[in-house]
Length: 554
Image (tube, rainbow, N blue to C red; front, side, top):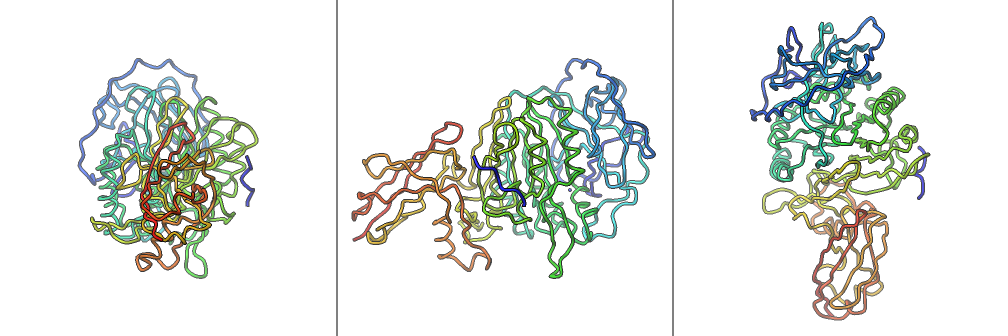
């Protein structure tokens, strides 16, 4: 398969740094009072592992990773250290010694985090955000509109991370989506009413939000946290280009408010047989002459080095899931703000490890398999967004915009179920039943026979890709193979025509690669009412079906 072309939130509201043994750091007032999850029983003590400590530096973070047996976030007598756990400063990666101790050099701006092992859980804030990191910003942020990071002061004498004992999951499900992106309180209401209960009802083990949590106005974050708390599961966040402090001037402090709320902007953790690498590929370059933020998709040498250091500590047979905001490769163009310039270096680091990339940013959905120097092609999934076309379009019976994505897909999310290192993925359109995975987009409704001459039946498979197979049938006629093609969504084009005033001036149908076509069969060109059936087999061998009724007039 062709290689992708070469190039080109802790605030006063929510402190996510761990508690200290002698003098716990202060926790903030909870945003949403939800009950704590029950504490699992402790497993048998792990075998000691060799001490792996970094050399003492001028500024050295020292602490202990411990088993929080009662779930109170404080190391109480009898709560042992956990050996062999990875801890990182977002550059170096070390393992705790036999007593759970670690030491790491740390510079201003770095975040020290504990890498959640597969057989442990992390304490959660009332909003469901994991508490796993400490921001070392002794002087705090410069004067930023949305607050940034409070001064952390000198390093604590002991920086301790609690882990809650558990069991390694054999299988689990993750709800994955990008770009909730509310501009105001009204759009937060849309997220609440359209998405939160639906995501919670899936029973997913956790959720991942792939950036653009906000749409520039970070003052909405406290209200947003109330919504994630209602989901009843851990919620991990990726930083997006609309989550930045644009008044920071450059990349150094641009995600300070985000980090003050969510913790580390890049981090790793394990669940089951999967290593999750959450990356920050938004390289902020300040405001342009037009006053608009400038950024590009870029990882940089420091982040690539950290990625390599994490990979070196994790067995190569683990499935690696990389989560970014900006795609590695945005099919259809090499524009720098929708592609990651140094993706080839990242693919090289992966070696031949099994890997999946999930991204947001584009407000449309597609699958690709990217070639790499070694190993099988990497599955690259640009995910559905909660906001669709930025909460636009005509309103439904609830007063919520239909907000169809620019590729004709409903706004929504994906459910990815992992079994060992294998996985299957399913699209979930908001407001739609789970089995609704495709739709006939042309012809639709009532159409004159003459309008069908020389035209194709067009089917949109929401999470379709090059490995899908699609067929159609008209009435009791034969099943006809359909051809995958790239083009604009007829359904979205029709919606833009019907309700242009409900969309922004720059919104248009973007060509997508999850459409299928076949010439309009003779039977469908005859006047009358016709039933069209569609069946598809996806990349995992599962079957999906859909149908529509079309009235053809003379």
